[in-house]
Length: 110
Image (tube, rainbow, N blue to C red; front, top):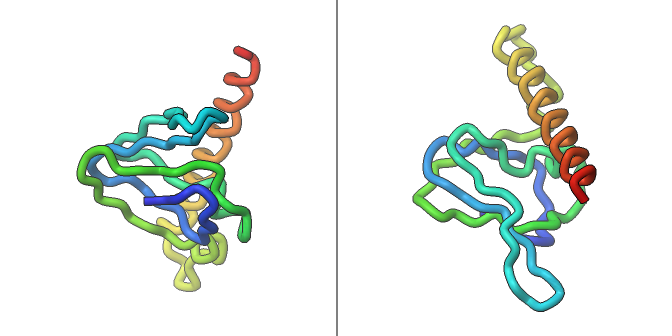
């Protein structure tokens, strides 16, 4: 679904199935960093940083359906004034903020 080192310009919403974000450790083992379920966003922070390679691999663990959304299209908004476009952008920012706050909580645990 997403490979470590891959550069992305879109993010995905997991519609069905399950996935996991993994990263290799110094001994070559895969460490599971996150378990993803329907409704979760994939690559949401990476999509906002063009050219930045993914630090993790996201792999499907159960047949997955993913909706890919281009980041540039999200930021540009809808030229027709669609009310859903504004809501989508607000939701994106909320999800990104939540991910940032969760990272701070993880750091506090260390």
